Image 1 (cartoon, rainbow, N blue to C red):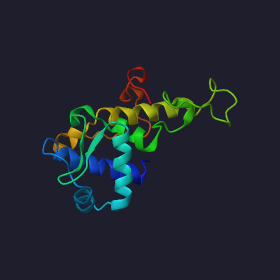
Image 2 (image 1 turned 45 degrees about the vertical axis):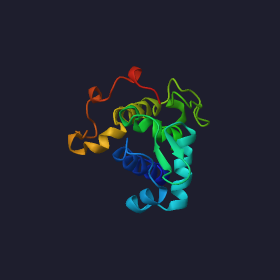
Image 3 (image 1 turned 90 degrees about the vertical axis):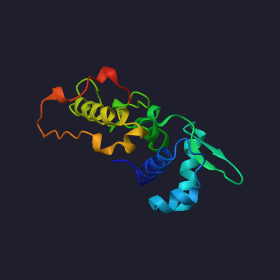
Image 4 (image 1 turned 90 degrees about the horizontal axis):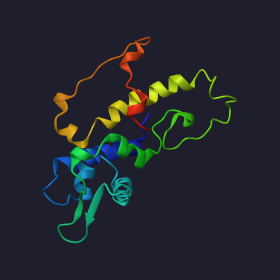
Length: 162
């Protein structure tokens, strides 16, 4: 589950995507439009700026704007900045790997292959959803996978990283 902080970050980035190329956007505008507490939003935008996704301008006419074209920023990047690892367990994370302290043998662990599939499915969505997607929401395809579905619906783990 993503945090409320990540949800607010995505909502703020949606507004900044809509305003891309028009100049800086005031925090108060984003806050009011998306119903995000202003102080919380300030901290989120600062974090995104510090990671190179946003830039800020001070003074009259100042505010925040996307530093990178919205077609080049995906949700995986945003979630890693705000929430850290995307993997459901630390032992299946590519970028933030940590051996589970309660697992004696990762090779025979029954949970690890399932968590790898969960990671890959989530990454498939997050990495293929750019900020530009928010301007074309009707083009989003949603596919439901029933429990017990074929593993062929899960993307190849070699193509993505957590």
